[in-house]
Image (cartoon, rainbow, N blue to C red; front, side, top):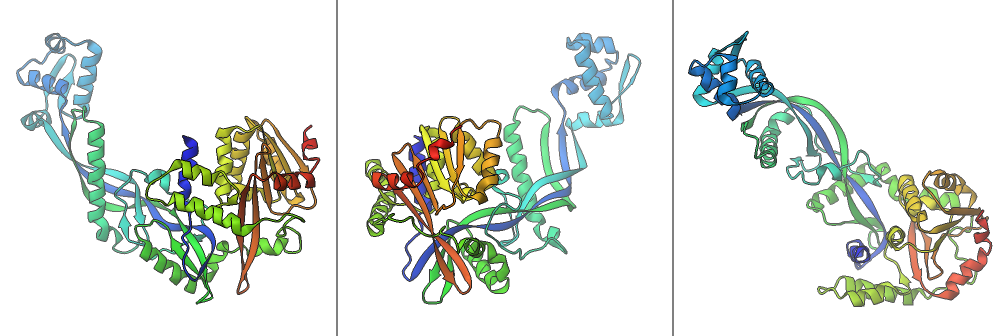
Length: 457
């Protein structure tokens, strides 16, 4: 079930509780790679296809007439012409009228039924990790994994460059990668009778390159002992090296970390009610934390009990960081009757403009979407409505939007509130995400926006 996938995937997003550290947020870190196109030469062995070999054998036995060759082989004129054209291009035969003869190259190739050629070529998409100094040999997911300057909050600085003796130093690794690719291609084209030896002869130069990034998640904490932020990198083969690079970069290039802070967002909204709860909106946070802890315990158990996980998942609780995004995406499969979104922070719902527009498009195919928003979201709402495939999206502007509230079929509500956390002139917005099935809380929000449904034209 797709729903199981969403729920169980939460396990990978649970930030660990670390003594003395306060969890702030989860970010993505960009690991720099170079994607190169290399100028190379190859040493290739070309095997003679059976049809070409038969023609050469006949010529060797003095069957030199075009019509006789076709008659002996029992093939039609078009196919014979194709074979003779290929042999002529390879300079194995000479052809005058209907008289055909072997060349010296043709006699030579018959001795081994193969030819060896040194040829220029290119190696495309060679990925080089600029931090570890390794060339990527496992390419099973590389083309879908790397992105050009994708949206990471920190991009690590490169510590390797492509100048000097780079190609000489890494020629052995490039050769290994070439051999891997040759083996893969042979497995793919096993029926091709012309495939023989194929090896890298020389690496000449870098024809072209660009910078791409792998994204790895990292939890951000505040350390009471050091009064500083601490990173916990998640599931990385080079975790220690990347962490060292992070710490050195934070010390030497602090401006490169500006994106992890929410200082600008806080300054823009600090004089408004955006960070305040609505009047009479009171949650028992301690109880909600206990409910979330219960879910986390079941998710991290060595034996997965889906009944226990379901009971903990579908209950009033604090959500795991940005879990609301997974719940929103699941609406494209669950197909509720209507979804009410009250927010003035629309892009945060799906990380980027493109993803948000695609999500709203998908949900609107089966559900009516009502959006209550502030004036700063007018342009976003217009873009959603202008998408050609959007069906049922209605909106209304309100002056007092606080955080985000998402109500699904009056059954449950997602509340996403942000709590400012200040650190030496910078600010983090700690997310308080609540999933509730409590009618009192749902009705409180609906009463604050009683005419949202009147936005339907």
